[in-house]
Length: 424
Image (cartoon, rainbow, N blue to C red):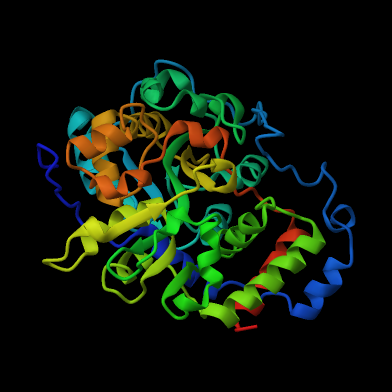
């Protein structure tokens, strides 16, 4: 439990779920060559992308209400929970508090329910196993850019809202998100921003005071002293935001510009490319890094004994229009054998006490109305110097969101990333 009177009490230090992203990228199919990328860039975004009828991209400017098929309806109201159910939650490693499973089993003990977690290392792997029947699970933990594939692929079932009363605890905007209008198929799980972390005992300047803090990744004084995330969309998004571009750009000139700027970054600072920033900053492997807010929070727990987390700083743009905000979700798989109990588990995860404990375990915030920067700092959960890691609902109306890219555009992005990681 957090200490009282503002005294800081660190959270436990589980292996963060996003540590697996680097491995999943490394084992993915080979990226296109640079020659292929340059050839693709000679085409216009219109000709490169499939037609809208073949590829639907949900976005804040194009919100989508997914249809509910007569062959895949929501379950009826007032059904009795299944006896002897075994609820399998398909998620990343250490991305769900085991105590939440135990409290759910205790709450519904008269039904003899049991819970277990099955893990994946990338959502690509997860979707493949769900499609093929290689996994039997009830609840899946995807990112919102998979909604179209899951609904059109008939992989998830619509939710019956009467079983999920705790939706009242979450930010109102998540009852009608752009990627799933009317929250027909999903509830929010975690929210996070992407920013910059540094140690004040190693970095003398106030990075946040720069006109454009993203410039530090091209500043030779930090050569070999920083890292970027091994996630092509997030790292390239940093380049786009520095230039004032949309982080989902399909403009071939801007994609080529990102390649040029990544090459200059390599030449100027030779950043490490990994997802171990939550360990690397505390252990002084790097002095500064690109980081997700959840990882910045987790850094506190990885500080060596005797070292104060007061040296840590997290910057997210004052103008959120130039910053990245995202969220993950919980959905009910169509294959579920226990849909009533699975609904109740989803509702359980939206309970404030369960959600807050889950936040403490994973480091990733759940969008509960009672979780605010002021109370998390005042009760000692987060040191004052890291209050900026707390995500506020207002950011989701202003910040940039990573959206699903049309396949041809995505291939161009990946070609650029391949060259960057190769040192070009």
